[in-house]
Image (cartoon, rainbow, N blue to C red; front, side, top):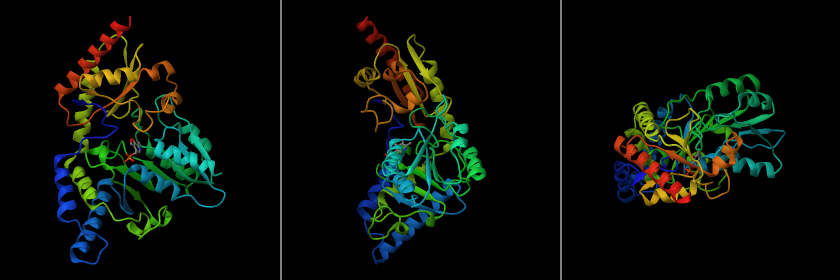
Length: 370
Ligand code: PLP
């Protein structure tokens, strides 16, 4: 099987599974309990927090361990909401774990605004400039789009925030960028990451918080994670997530994936197959199959051992694709599209084989339809 849906999830490294088992079965103690073993785990979690801060290039702040990016995003946004005459800004390209929180705030009567996207899927900086004002409490903009791979210029956004509303917090959903592309944390107040997108386990992630006093808890309980995320920490998952980071060289992987994508695209030379290239992350792109539904391609490809995605896994069961529509991709192309996403541990042969199978499957379906 050739897995080309790595933006949906990634295969966990074997080493992470080993670490996971060790902490789940041997060091299974509750890090908040009073035993010596427990307090050693507590220290280990704090050391791991420091590890992630270093990985992020943070000079201050902390990391709250969560049950994945959906939870981190909810905590970042809902935890920043305050009573008063505040506005909340979101890019319209956000993943449902941000977008639907924004919609829920809007339904509760909060002043929520969405920033338009450019035709290459990035945040429209002119529109952002227009919507930024002194009342804005929070701006939430993703680093890399899970739909298009478009990369937002976070640096530029922080500078604009500093100029127009320095009190606004900036939250970045970095799920498709952390451990994949180099970026700077400077000026970012809150940042989300998720282990299963970089070969760690599912159901574990983190939220970088520049200053923990800016956030309020959204769940109530025993007060773990500085009171911001009650619930016994998933020690095994957190340690396995750390292991995944230790095994990844971001720059080396970036080069490898850029090369793999080039090989893939060069060998996908076929009339009727269009590559939607937004010039962003090498990890993600979309393909449009003229005259054939994306869903048809997805199932036919799976029969031949190639797994691709249909937009974001969370939204793929719903009609249409809000983000591709927003950036002006015609509906006929959207229904004929699939998302392909790579990882750095694939071989060139796998990539070549996948491209050939895609061409064969497409030509085969076209022949049968005509
Ligand atoms: N944000 C982005 C950009 C994503 O791509 C995803 C997963 O597809 C999520 C958030 C949600 O991540 P999790 O599965 O860890 O909740």
